[in-house]
Image 1 (cartoon, rainbow, N blue to C red):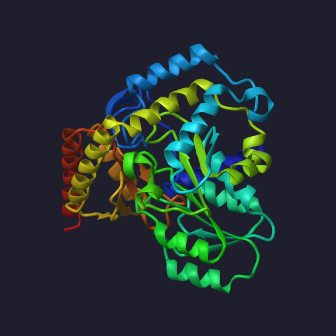
Image 2 (image 1 turned 90 degrees about the vertical axis):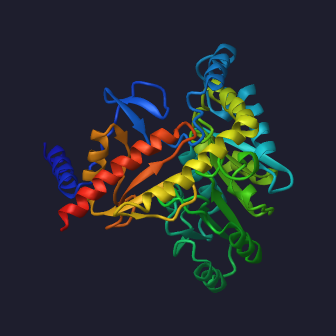
Image 3 (image 1 turned 135 degrees about the horizontal axis):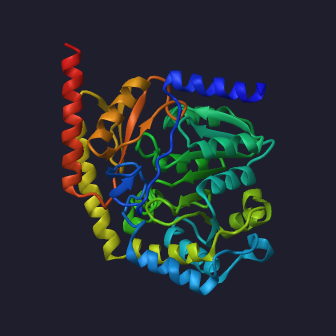
Length: 398
């Protein structure tokens, strides 16, 4: 039992530091109002930015896909599992998100984590230098580690530092790797400057648009489209379980890049393809995102973002300057952050506490995730609860 005892001691240490994570059980569809652990709750925890996860058209498309294609794919994409639904979705994604490159093509993945591992490890290896933003998502970090490339970390969004590092690097192959919207801060990478540096230094620019796709840019085409960028050096990753409301992920790039991934990306080659019904539902989601309803949902979401930014400034904590649907409120200590989360829970609000190692020590925070499914009344309720909690903290400090 020594091995078990070692693990139990490790769990006790996490408890003492306020770092143990706990799952919640949801009994209803993902929406603004849900039943969580048996309680009626307003959720500010999901990444369902456009409120599409429970949309009747997507539910119907998923059911239709199951009727057409069955429950599972039966194999990997290269060994019998690549359905017409997958092929159609890849065509739809290339057309929708591939405006930044000529001869665009898309590749569909089961998860965003797999897509990031696939791209980084397939385009970088021994002899490549990877330049990675300090606040990159864990999947990009793990991809960099698995690639066996020489990894250099530049300070978050610091283009002068990155430029100097690129200038000092040798003549070998290079790649720059970054999120577009950073998931715990909500800020947007300086994509225009990154493209300039990538082209100057003949480097791939791998961007993870997980939190921008569907929300930013014309028709929700993403952060790259919002910045109006075009470059053959760009490789864009996007996820489909956030704003798109379904599941999976994709890579869009020049057709030669995608063919290379098909031949060399191990997370793509050696896994069973996702259920074709899911791909069928994602194609329906793209039509919603690009249409009038998508525009209306984005407009409502941006109104909520503006109001939340003002609301958070009225508390005693530190809001991060974010103009996206990710609205962090930095509390500081783990225990204080967990106490604030618990106070909001008592008011029927689910706002998750984010702690190290996800964020740096001393910057634990609430991550308020907004959705077009939220109403102004939902925000009013959150604002009132935060004001009460803030007043209690300030009173206790006197």
